[in-house]
Length: 266
Ligand code: SAH
Image (cartoon, rainbow, N blue to C red; front, top):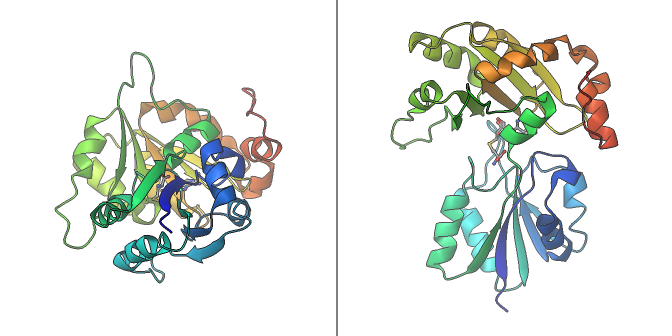
């Protein structure tokens, strides 16, 4: 048997933010290789599949990428529908490129199913558009991370050039990020908004200025955090008034649970 590997975006966490195509492949999957952060509720959709956790969390055990590649290529010899399930969108800040290169080399059929990336879920939760007519015409999705052996990451250039920047995997390095940006000329009063656990009932948001970024990041509780930087985040000053200490009662949390949009009065 030769099957197909589907690199599927699981979205930011809420099960109903999966695409219909992602749900369809999960339902008929024979085997699912998934990241650690993919919620159980989403994995349950793959009711007949064997589930193999291969993802990594920073600071924790990480299955070597070439072993994952090999597992995928081997699995298509035994299974028709092999799903590689990834958080958010598979093509952003993920190792999809390495998996695709390997699969191409091995002449394994593959297909990519896009997912909602964290930046978009965070923007939705805040009710803050990442672009704005007349003032924000460019958005950069960036990370400050650099893998060993990689060429230097020019993230500062991207953050300075774009009207809005969304920083992935940045909460743990908030101090260094704020210092580097301010040293490079970004005004310390630039608005920032942090969204933790976007799309989930446990969502929390914190807003302030670039100078306050380290303090805001320290208030996050260990979930994944997207950092929005730019004038568009000025609006999210209202978010600072959210009852974050009781995140379950935040407007977005309520809306997420009931599947309703956040009301403009919240
Ligand atoms: N491919 C993923 C990103 C993987 S990198 C995507 O497209 O979203 C992991 C980083 O994504 C986290 O450190 C965090 O910055 C961000 N992230 C993922 N899920 C998130 C969520 N639910 N809320 C906020 N940020 C999230």
